[in-house]
Amino acid sequence: MKKKVLIITTLFSAMLTYAQEPKTDGAHCVKCACDEEVLNKKGHEILPVKGDIALGFNTIPVLDMFLGTLNRATPFAGSSNVVSYVQASNNQIVGKYYLDAKTAIRGRVGFNTLSGSMVSQVQDAAVMFEATKGTQDDINAASLIRVDDKLKFSKNNVLITVGYEKRRGYRRLQGFYGGEIGFGTNGSKQSVEYGNKFSDQYPVQFTNNFNSFGVTTVNPIAAGRTVRNLESKNRGGIRFGVRGFIGIEYFIFSKISIGAEYGWGYSLTTRRGQTSTQEVYNNGQKGPEVLIEEVDVDSSEKLKGFSVDNNNGSIFSMNNTLGGNTALSGGAGALTLIFHF
Image (cartoon, rainbow, N blue to C red):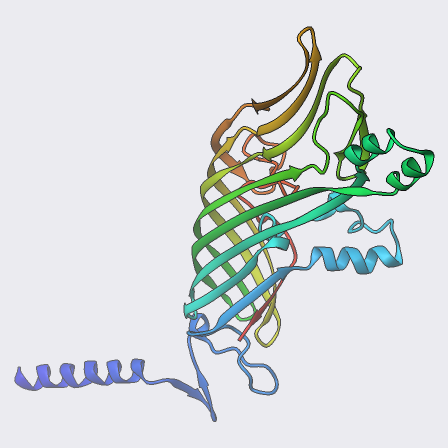
């Protein structure tokens, strides 16, 4: 009996030892297909491994630019056919870090700001009024004197998303799936300083539109209200969401792949209404007067719900102050070029 137990134990140990040793076929090691090390002809690894970092970008705009230059009738030509890898990916840095060959942490970071100022010159109304009390030469000289209307503005659009990704596949073709959570904010404001104050004695010029640099002249004898903006806090808000995704990648070269992704998520969006501080010149029954008014230009919003990727027409979308759609859920069916290193 002891001999039988010894023989069985010896055979079992041998089997375990054999199973744990890498199988060989001549001079090459043979592994399970799921753990197979994929090498190119030069012996370099093709698939990502533990510690690799990946950076990717949407190739559709590149194809659109290239193919559209050759033939505007190409299916890729035109902005309506541009589909982002992740929503608003042109404004984000997209990356991954591989915990192992089959698991990665992924993130998107977009921190976009824009600020500046505009200056428009208008006639100095006070100097011109004083010149009208003198000679024509005084008037001609005063007509050349200008004051500055100054506009200052700032905009911001921030989105931070972190996700967890799992992978599986065979050789160059890899599938992936996972989830991510994101948070974002956006908003804008502007203020204007006018070179001419409103007057009940003489006409006053001021810039009414800094995009076209249009100028309005206010005459003190004209009845009614004339309004000019001093400060505006435009639409902006907070976004929060969670999203599940699934996609595929094909490694065309060592550590370089083309991928496509689609997702579905839940998002919550809040948006404050636009407010404005404005200066009013009112020539009413009581005579000319200047007023400062605080005005709520529009209402606030709170939206929530589920949406598939790039469903820009849904109620879960929001127009931000930089233009475009700011739906948190994003990234669908695009050709994505990804580099691993």
